[in-house]
Length: 130
Image (cartoon, rainbow, N blue to C red; front, side, top):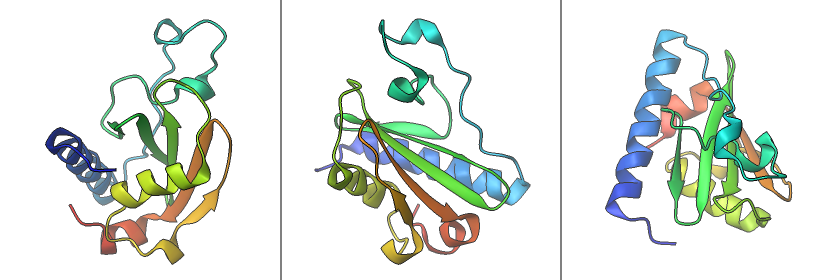
């Protein structure tokens, strides 16, 4: 997967928003679910992060979205079309978004419609490349 300049710029904006939220102690929340953006039969899980927000963007056919609490970040990866994706596809997106973070610091929870990755705020702050 070769990111476009726009995808790289979007990733940089997401990382900057995350680092700012961490520095100010702001909780990284999912955007409010907008049912009007979903197709019939789809749930929030299928369309998580489709609403414009500072903590998510796209990479090729994938969408990624962060949310978190005081000390833990959660990265969600899904396909734009809502179809299933492999864990390897999710890991590829996570590697792009978390560039600089050692894979050993990222805990993964495989799924079928979404792939989930978890890491500590301090890991992101100390390692991610803007």
